[in-house]
Image (cartoon, rainbow, N blue to C red; front, top):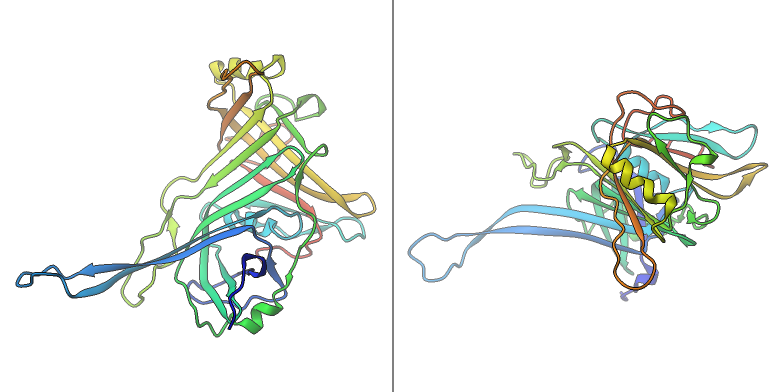
Length: 348
């Protein structure tokens, strides 16, 4: 059968239930990606016993599989990937009698969610990774451009002859959301103030030109036990970490205060709201990140030439001992709130 190009690659992902057991990707499970790097490595253990001039025998050791996905972030489908690595999602609430629904995705203390990932990489070949657990996420954006989402994770194995996800089944896994990319544009609102201050309001709006949010879970990827050749389901092996960086086009009076806040070790709170097209009536697509406790890490305004001096603000997102004003019930380092057309939880 014929080879294909990246233009023809079809990627699909579906929530799975049992580690090592694939589930069939169905219509709506296809996703649009810009690149992927899913690989499988095989440890080879050489027999270096004496009485031989050259090693001629080997045995197979640990097989390890991992994978990363890169894509444009979208309101109505790829929020599933945020929910997957966060680990918990509520039940969508219908807005009025419209097609708009709201939901909140929260951080589970321990990650137990994973998915089956499959790719059409050749006209007659499917690469299937029966179980893939995301361990890190990067969400980034630049003014007047689509935001991007990147995830890396741990898989159990690669299967090239799957009877679960075949050419026929993958062909039916059409992309569930081909529109509604999340744009960083004039409708995007960043608000930041002191953690001890009043609820975030219009007077707390700040205006960065780009941002990058990173979230990492410390997962143990080296778990092999008797009875299975492949790695067991990864488990938490340390504290998760979350960080946010904001870039401002110029160092000025509006952002100088962050240097003073850094010196005073003043904790902050923040939210970022992206707003998209209208769903129905007055309800629009929304994607909101909320941070109840931010610690300024490294404000910077370095001169590199005769032009304007840019300013960068880096922060660690931490848990909050008590919810700050306007963020009732939000104690974990961040929360995602969405408004889209999902009628059931992405993790159901």
